[in-house]
Image (tube, rainbow, N blue to C red; front, side, top):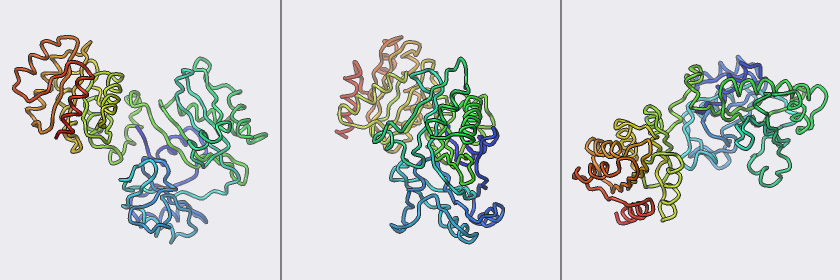
Length: 398
């Protein structure tokens, strides 16, 4: 689960992390009051969407030289004027795709005198089985470009989960950023607070870009991006309350209500599979035969008939879907349960696109018999390769 920048800073501020003062607004009429509350003389007007690259983004329909989604202004009147321009407009960034995202919230933040910019992030490092800090002196830059062009400027500092954060981690971060003296001590204290926030709130990613050194020698988090582990949200109702469903795909929201692992993609073949590994293989083989998957959907090992029905309905709700591939290898999941769920869903929503079903494993013969006896226009497949070729051919033929 992702949150907006101002929400992320609210979470970090609760752990004592130094962040700039700011006010979130939802209408242009609130902009002037927010600016006066902060006091100036410099303000930053920030679009709040779940995507990076806001500062370099462009608004649809704006002039080529128009400012991006993050703007530095120097008067209350400019704050109000920019807020009116940005709210309700569609911001396109490198992460939104060409469709962009509508800006429904802004964050009016006090300006800062910046002496230096750094990059800092935290993530779950699969290589070490623990949390790792990733830091660089190249703050404010596209970190992907830094990693590609000058990888030596990126430093990874793993934390052993058995010991937790130790003083030497803070010293390593300070050294990597070229900090000494009081700034090095600040870096150590900041690392402690960030580690406490990361583990305490079950984060999966925390990115601060830039982390800045101000003109008066203070470290401050000028931006913040947080992703939380969705599997741990039941422990954090305060974080769940921050969810902005307008930033999410409606199909993904519906899938989460049924405990389905669903991610919308941009292709034409809807997929319903059990098991994440099999689902990834299914996406790969669809691409191998020349088409694009419309989604990743894992119904899991213990899916019920109702859950399968919901999954099928979510797939068919996507107008881009031109064909559906059901690929089930029954271990814990039983093929007859899948078959009954598919039939129930088809009878509920209808079937206007080709449907290929491949079943194998537990109760496979019962599942196949249920499909055959349903009277539905289903294309059977013997294995995954056969299934992929058949659904691709059916979609291209249609």
